[in-house]
Length: 179
Length: 450
Image (cartoon, rainbow over all chains, first blue to last red; front, side):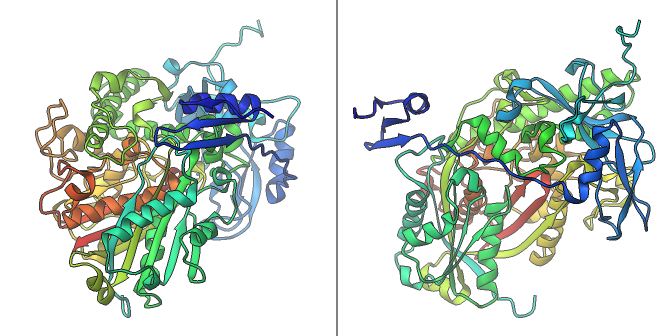
């Protein structure tokens, strides 16, 4: 078997390793470092456990928060137990319209979402609910988004049983498709 | 606290932080920093080290579970007491406090605190994914998990609360007012980025020293609006080490140890969405009226940071941090979070962070930044260059801050940096601040010249 190729730039080492599995870095410190590909992948068998009902209802196009049975604090992102008093919560249906509490447009990201950039993240606030919901905002560009603007929920069909089964769009957008 | 012993730093060491160190694995990196620290206190024998607290953030980056055991092994410290410390971005700060605890409690007289991270083992976007796994994987990560995005959400609200509602209170068009406020804040964030990159020019351990101009700082690639590339720290390989000792032991090894005067730690909800909308836990000099109508912390401020500072100041007897502290090394993973942190730790009131920068308070007196800074040097923040310019090998970062603060308070910056440009004259007391994911945990440690 031929010796791995040598490179003086680490960027070139990385490219070669991805291609052939090994390369030698002729390090300016004077060492020759053997660099190899080391794959690692896995599938988790993940239970939503106490949050299961939220995702099942989400898949049916319903958005549920949770309300503390004791102190009545209302969570937009559900929690099975209240962080203020420790009591159990009960489900309540969230309104499908809310407002932007904060937002950003991501031009870069994690590997899994890199192909979706640029995308907008929003924290959505709802009337009469104490906490927020993190989601995506579709159908609008960075220059037009502002805190306080109305947004409404849309659901992915078929559902994938992920929190991204819900996203938001501007509430005031006129739908040309309906005409 | 009753029964608590005084704890001193007697030595420290840092590897140069770099994008990659293919010539050293994590064990050798720690060994290099450790040998440097041991070399600085020749009277201390390795056999006198009684325990170690070893920190790294991510098993994903390491691809080696029990990596801390392998460091213990490599340094020849077996069979002594040791444990791994992990606390997200605050891993290093927690390791320092874990070392402090074992000496303060009387269990050990000498404890090694060592930390590392090897982030070059994956491409940057995979690294972003590993880091984003430190957000709720049911409700946050699948939306587009990306830490710069989370901090952008936080600073956008901070700008709304503290720039839009003040400087642009008179602008009726909501969207225009917010956009103008954001432009103003971007300019201030760029000033922070300029400060940290220029400070790092004089720090030989830093990864990204640069004579950055405002034009360059503002012009570079946007990562997550309004945070652009020069306002984000990068991934690094590196290691850092501190050696802590009891009072009796410390003065055996060095005439110039540095006292760990007080520690504090705070926490908050993992999900930004769950953060409370309550009242500000106030410092003595703040009035309730200062924060009338402000819902706290919401997503605009770090309650964990405020909580940590309150505890650390109480334990250190600090009444007026801006007068009593000589400098601060804080966790500027983003230039936005540096501004937010000034307010959390009481260098100014909530809402005054942008003005604090524009006035020049956190800049060094003797360095030319190419900026008009009327009140520069009040309290230098990140004289080392911070995370933005030094790099952020997570498990080492909080310890690195401790090493730089130790050298500042020992008045030995010239010896260790090869120049004294960053040495703060007569530095008496410093604050180090380590911060985990969106402020879910923060440590504050006060160090004092002995």
